Image (cartoon, rainbow, N blue to C red; front, side):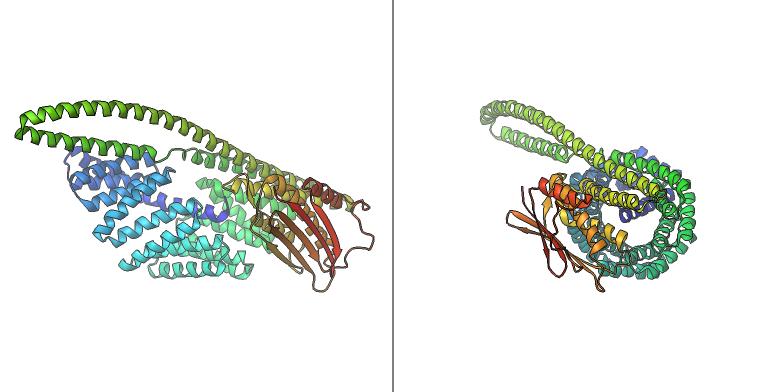
Length: 605
């Protein structure tokens, strides 16, 4: 889970927590329960049930769903369309919080149908916004943007400024994740303008923090610092402790990039102190990981070891929490639809019986004959229906069991890859600590090269557990992350121009692992030996042509010697390139083309 998602989740959690604290007082709950206990089936009881459902959302979602369903049944009985749409929206939110998106969407669509008839624009905006949030957490950003856009159009019709600002903020987060930074800045600035007009201090602080993150990702650290400080000052004036902890960590991370290590330590201490008080484990693991890096850079090995242990502890706590949430997402909407089909069947049977009674009054003899035939037919149908239903239930049970096993297997595989990635990062940190005590340059270089190879493998495992499909990995995302890390390690000032061209290509781990290690060695060598010119240039390309893939790395350095050969050189890196090329059954071509150029050509499986 990246930091942007954490910030959004905890910000939303804070909003729900504050709503809960402000609204779920004993007096109001007791008042609603008293109205329900009176047993008067009127609109007052429907409102009381919906109010209770709202109170329990985010704290006891099963109870929220129960009260919302009770309100729906009564509002249908009273033929009150507005109250029905309110209850359906609450039911949809309950299913969304319980991790059942199909059931949530089913009820949201019912609410939309009614609100369209009522021309309830504000209500339509709320339902579409809820659907957009649901798709965002499913990582379906096109759908999220589509429903956010629908929602904001309805809110403009009723001039709901608070909701419009919230949607601008959500759109900014999506554009930032997709690296569309200019669009993200535009959305956050629109959100801030509205928040400032309505004097929403918490929303203003959040907008400043989001702008700071965008400018930090763009490399504009001066502006990023300004916005992070503004966000922190506003957060400190409110009771928004989660956002305040996030602001401290964001500032610490920024100062780490610009090498103000004392400032990093200062803000991390504040974040840890505040985070411990509110048990913000999703932030504490980030704080201790950054502390470990800061201690390592400042050569405080003892504290680096202690902070690394703290990071491992909180990271494991986060994993436990996330895994429990994932285990709640195994049920589908099938049972809900099946129950509705049964209700429809019972209603149809009831109508048939009423027709029979009317016919009996007119023609008793005809009714007896027809009734006897119908009863026989119904018996046959019921027997057949029960048999079919039994078979369906058995088949559904088996399918559900298979689905549960497959989901559990996928969850466990993702957790394994996540832990492998964490263990590789720990090994990298330990190598980093060990390198402080090594004086021999050759040995130090060997350790540093090993760290980069470990990182290449770690990034691959990260891509695997973040990917929806475990078997295939997006090569573009993997190589971009790998090259960003190598550029930060070998060329932090970006003196050398690194250009990347990658076709859309998905590979399995058996192909991408050796390919990634080869690319790691080639780019590392290019930075070491091919960037001696005044305007150094490194070009990386990964292209697909029918059933073959070509990877090339070219620099504008001195190039290869005339008698260059992989077999003649006693270099571990070149031997690894040769070894992994053999594993891919790849052809390696070296040539001098205004510098050194190495091409790797292999066939797709």
